[in-house]
Length: 340
Image (cartoon, rainbow, N blue to C red):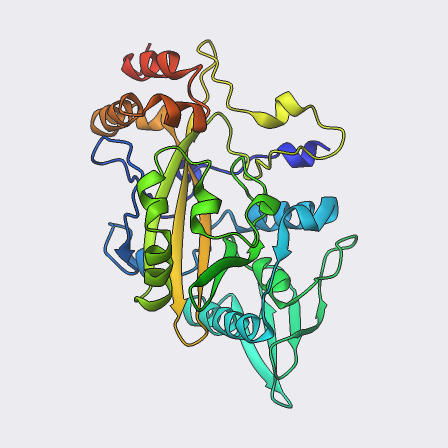
């Protein structure tokens, strides 16, 4: 059971990874914040990529395989996910990965059927001509077989994957493969529209009113990226609200800041959107990173921006982010000299 509590490395401990810090305005804001994919954010080629594969890959892959052995339906569900949408999404991922990382991923064809190989895992995926998964080889012993093309492909990347579909004036989340939820459950999101999905999020009232227009933007506009962030007292990727069997719910919950032994991280999500107007649908990925606040404290500018952002949170946002009980202690710690 301890495997579920294994933590990821923060960015500061990785030799080559993008270092995003979307708090430069020193204010916590809930807004679309959409940027064109490829916008220079100071991370070179990383900013141009749809998928981001770094030295944390093996950990992310192990954690995805672990949740699949626990209960796949907790992390992967579909609703009205048409074969055509799944085909287009699968083809996009299969083509994009070798384009961005030819040294890790290779494609080939056998009788017009795609074959995908992942050098990082040793897995090979076999598809039919319609991009439906036929079989997979190279899975670790004890790992359940992949359920579908989306299930198989989501396990080849560090991102979580969501698909939003549209039919007439209706839109809904048609597929969710999220192994690293941040205190929310897949079953509460699948099949729902934008406003329903984000109803629990503090400060989302204005965006929820424009939910249909935002989904239309996701589907019809060029690829975009946005960022979301919160604070965590660990770097555990999976914070599903329901703990795995036999784990203490209090230990699983986290978000318990201890001033005498301060451990604090920015949990950062790089969210990338790629629209497919002809379907119509949009692929939405979530890549989770962690920034070590203990290191950020040593940067006076970033530390001040983080303090101001926390101070600017509304009472509702503090509750939603799990900071209501610890805001004062965190601000006091951030205000101390790092040597203290």
